Length: 333
Image (cartoon, rainbow, N blue to C red; front, side, top):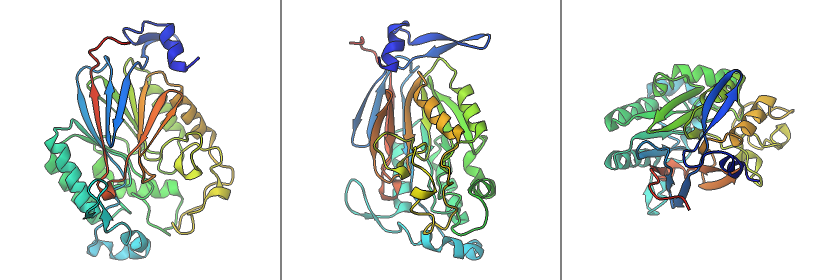
């Protein structure tokens, strides 16, 4: 029997809340009983659990870069990505555009539509360009919309720079990207909006750390629906290795891009136990409403154990997800 149907059959579906025992505590636990629809880049969720409607704009893979005198010491690490994606084609109109124009257009749309939250889902930058980060921070301040950010694998990566991927992520997240995180830990964040909990996890190294798994376990124990935000989508059956965090074939032998990206090769032994446990935990979480990710540069939808995972069209050509959370006022069929 389907996980959600089973829980629904053994609990009060009209409220969507059950009691879960954790140690000596009894914690209310919401069970997803929502409907959703997808039209082009617009997603609508309907659920009685939402305290009121919410509008969220999800942006990933803009791949911005700008250069000034501060970039001079780093040009040998940024030259390839500084030449990528500078001229693109708009995903709706087919007209020429650019990452900068696309990002500004998306922010203007969010302001015009009175979005409640911007979710920046990684690879907003092609590398940690100081000029581009300053530009984005200025645009976000002008927009005046609350936002949450997680890094993508390019945001902190200077190609060919010495150091492990964990070391480089920590270094440039603190040295350059820190203004985008606000009060949040760069590795993980949690915020609630109109009866929905957003959990944001940085998996831009393709892996999950023990402290991130512990954070997810703690923050998911709530009587409300959860939206998980990642840069790299979780493995879904039938998807290629590069698509998903937690893919069983992810390892050194299947890493095809490490030379061109000038980075350490994926580990010979593949994913850690923690990463695989995180993936299993996410898809077994009864109050998981949806997952939103980027990275792939192509829109997609997978349904895994009843959980929909949406990948956004890349913002470098104007793509984004326009997500509506609407209270379901109709009787359930």
